[in-house]
Amino acid sequence: MVEVLKIVTLQTGEQLIGGLVELTDDDGKGICFSIKHPYIIKLVPSGKVPREDETEFRINFNKWMPFSPNVSFRISYPSVVTIGDVDKGVHDVYMEKFGYLYEQSETEQKESEWKEMNSGEKND
Image (cartoon, rainbow, N blue to C red; front, side, top):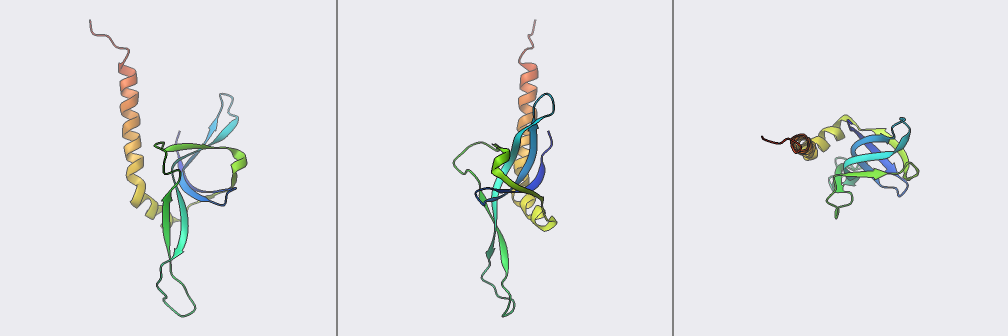
């Protein structure tokens, strides 16, 4: 299961950025979405005014579900309004800030799979 970085707008109005994948049953029928390392993404004024008629913005990331230790969350289809691709600049900022989480998750997953595979082995 490979997540693709996407922006998801929920019915609540929140815009999330994170690794998105669609979960399916054994027949390939969609069940729901799963989003990994989701952050609420917002544009906020930076306070700098380059010209009189312009406002400069910065990207603000806030962890979604900050009181949960989980890194992946299931989102029902009815909760999703739209899904979009991530702008390259936003993608780069997200990966610069949070890319290490994906590397950490992959390592933990590999270690878990290794332990699982070797837990049934017996030394004679």
